[in-house]
Length: 323
Image (cartoon, rainbow, N blue to C red; front, side, top):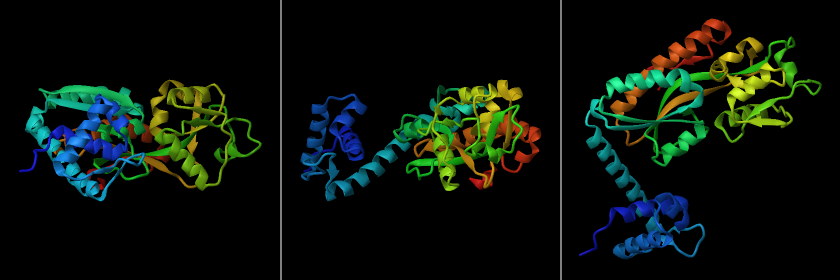
């Protein structure tokens, strides 16, 4: 009779298969390196086959490991989904929700969203996080969050379910006294420096990709992570930036000292979505999505489109049929 497989062995194997490293798996699980190695050896011994090539760094799966890894992923996903459903029952009885919001929406959307959820999920305890988009996606993929609002990245996200929320166009933000045309701002003789969003963040990557498509090269003198700091510097006349309508809207205390213009040339936008893991109960995800749509419409698309009619077509919440 074959030896029974231990669930911990399978979890450790899945992490090793993903990272190719016993040390990284030990760090992520909090286990010692020797314990992780022991779990892997026990699993291979129980199966009677090598699952990884121990001679390579990073480790690579053997053909048997590739086949077994696929079944382990499907099996552990099903177990997690079953656990979530048992713990939650119907969505009114959910007991825990780990939710992260993109910082652009934390002040206006956060309190309203959690008020709605606290009523709809009376037995639920909430863990709320504010992070940049790329960190939210990483935490979702490592199962450290149940749901998160983030910008859609350029690559596919296996294991996550997307509920699109809003089309957020990029715009040019300039000091209030600027009187020229927007396209003049990146000419070689322009005096104002360009204030970049960090290229480690999703918003920064999207801006750089568009500039590259247009074959526009701008000096890299200032690169920052904080939206408020960038808009503040623009309001002081220290530079200009490419931002989004929602990011601009968030920096309301600087609005009387800056002016906004459409992005010159071909317009582009980011899609802001709710992402959930594939083990998050669908009813809970749909509840969050519906609450977010209402809040974003009231707090962002309505006031911005009223103030800037030229943004009305570009900046909008996405209806259910676009999901």
